[in-house]
Amino acid sequence: MFLGVIVFALVATLLAILALRAIRALTHGSGKGQQQQTSGKSNPQAESRKKGQTTEKEESEKEEVQKDAPKEDLPEETRSRYAASLSDGISEAFYLEDTSFRIDEKATADECISGSALSYIEYNNRELAGKDYFGFNLIVEDDARMVLTYNGCAVATLTKVERETTAIINGEPVTGTIPAYRTNTFPPELKEGMVTSDLEKILEASGRIKACTGNPEAVSAVMREYFTQGENVSKLRRAIDRKIQMKESSRRQKQDSAQRKTPKRILPR
Image 1 (cartoon, rainbow, N blue to C red):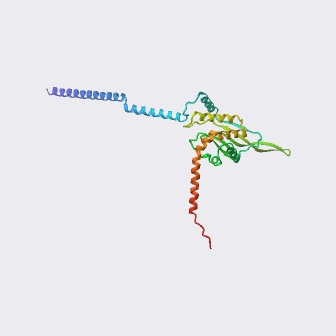
Image 2: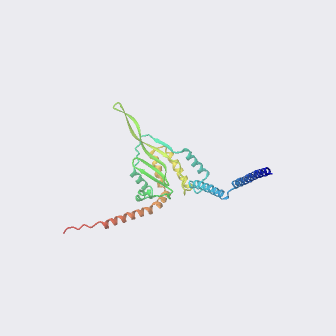
Image 3: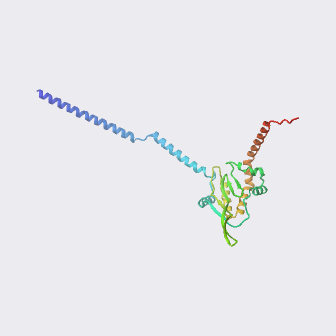
């Protein structure tokens, strides 16, 4: 009888252990299933954030494209010319013939003043034109280079360079250098605020300068022509005249202030 009680106790303990393991297994499986279901479900907030980030990126890219394009839709012909200009890149032409031409800053100023409604004070302050000036401007470095710009970007440059040459002097070859000229034209750079007519003017000026085949006298004449055109001069004056007025007023005020601060000399009796 005592042996039977022991056997019964062992069997009961074994059954309890097996039941406990079964319950643990069921509980673990249920938790894992719930976790899988939870991970399988979509997170509305995460999806919303992801969608928002994608939209912001697309809008940013769209703005960048629009920023570099004219406000108006380009006509097909202008679009084709612009695409061809980009494909051609920077053009370069050398003029190696003997010429008396030289880049003369004073002579250029006189020619621009005599050929337009500009005054000398306006010509000498033409660099005051800011980023809102959509027109041609001229940079002249005496005996060095000329640059035609549009809205601050180079359209074309005329640069003095030196080329080697050999001459026979007293029966001996002597090598030296003589001046030559290099002309470069650049593809248009589209900026925010430009319209189709701006691009067409740049393409036209660039084509005219290319047609000069590097002749420095012809190139400089075309640059001056576009700079001194009536419409361009009107735009330039509107862009700089008020700034010149403020500049002159400020200078005058500084001069008056300096004179008032200077002590008066007392002459001896």
